[in-house]
Image (tube, rainbow, N blue to C red; front, side, top):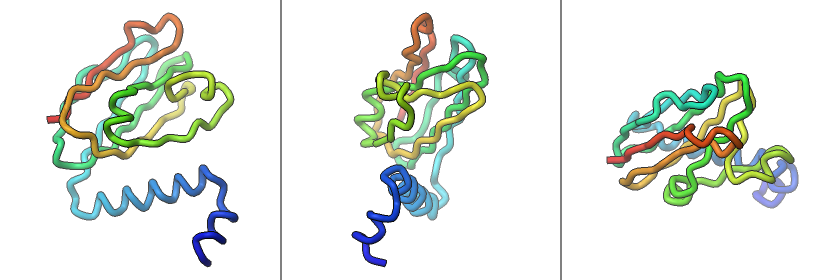
Amino acid sequence: MGSSQLSSVLPVIGRISILGLAASALLACDGSMQTVSLTAEDFRFTPDLVRVRASAPLTLSVYNAGREVHEFDSAILMYAAKTSLPKETPESASTPGIVIRPGQSLRIVMAPPAGTYLYICRRKGHANMTGTLIVE
């Protein structure tokens, strides 16, 4: 099946998922993939400070263990890491971050350059729900 045929068969989100899985598999082949797990609880991220190496790709997982909907946003990190994520729900389209409902999780594979990146929840009333990712 040619790439144009594949494009017409798979929806955009499916194509992004397949590309993400392929990239994850290639990056993980050398065993250097770093994994960071964050938990979004009501009004805080745990941990709120994370350090990783700049020399290895990163899988960032965010699980919403709270009772409220949260948003994960880190505009500079997403830009610096050249991460592209689909907006899957109508609610996501009206917000700058990625909406994570209670009990759901988000997974991002990236290779960010060295730097300090703030991540936040942009929901109203969650202003102090922040954390920092330091890539050294």
